[in-house]
Image: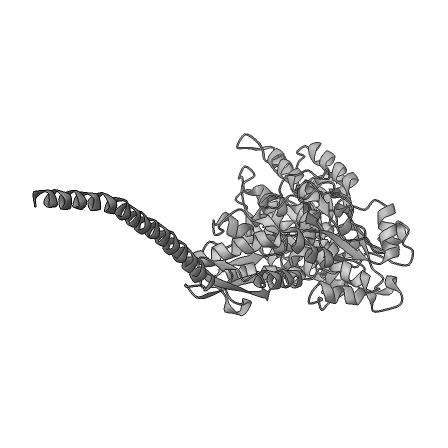
Length: 592
């Protein structure tokens, strides 16, 4: 039995050894199954996450885009292509709406708080015509990133093909346009016989503003530098004169201004004779002309010499939207810059940057419209300068006719501040005359006693257009003046007033600017008879005002005040050393 037990024991030992591998195998199988199960679970979790994203677990979202009318159609085409990709942004299924709104209207709406609903839903992405339209928002740091252009189109003048040839042959630049608009027969003089003077249309909008800023910049700097137009430059007399001349010419051409560039172009092509059309030239972009020319309209692009403004259509992502809207706006803008989407812009007549960003792809040329490389791009103006130009466009000045009647009596030799009264006044007048608009007229008379034979006054420079020759003559005369003797104010003012009435110009304000430092001491004329003689010389059909600047306390001030009042003028008491004297003389010698 003992052996039997040993045998059993031995047999039991062998069975224990044989179960060990089985257990290991089972454990390994279970381990592999667990690992495979974990991977499967992970993949399922990942797939479920992806499916959840594709299912837009955060719901739907709408990307609101506001675009300038000239690019809105192309943007809609790009938006349809983007929506077809079923874009998902921050777990939102995004669709796009495009609202067409003029850039100036959209800019005003976006600047308002709350925004003006009449301009459409508040966008996450704004595509204005120019970067200048967006400059106030950029300066206020209300954009999410630096805006980049989607498509560009240089600003040109839409004109008849024959006029484009003539203007090109004459090398007409931006600064020449005010003269061509203000001078009778100006186009005939450069070879466009039968055209008269240039009749521009200036419909409200970014394109007109860009053109006027280029005119202003060219007036300030004919070398067409890259410097931005400043607010002070935009408010200077030469710029105000130039923009005013174009504004008045546009109003004369079309008293009811065209609603937009399209209406202005319609006015150009409505008749058989382009020279007789109410409009000769319209600031437009290449793209605005492209569609019309491809339809067969007889139009052409004229590119004035100088720097070239462009509608650069930046993609402006607004920072005051929600995170999904901002992300969607950025994604859409990037999509729009893709090679396939650029074709939508090219088909509409826009230029687009090539892949390397160093050149541009352009549409095919058509009759009257080619797409040359841009030489000198125009710099964006300061926002305040742009506003000043638009203010002048809305309220243009008119050319004035001013006869300066300057007292050169002995008392003008008195010291006032660091110089004599006469030196102070002539220095101020030289600054004023240097800034008088070219279209204005100005003359210089001096008076004392017996300056010209028996006459107490002398005509130093007769009333004439303020061109370079007359400015030089006026400057030379003022620099050479010296004090004389007595003060024959009444007789001299009467003669100057009668001359101004006789030489009256119907284009703008006519005035006599009397600058004196003392009372009349010519007893041959009483104050009452003097005022009566002025009243007798007054012609309601030829109004001339008399403005008076009294440099000292003047015992004759009541008579001078009556003189100014009965002619519609002003009287200002200011010392010759007062820093405001120049501004006073400038105001009184201008249209107002």
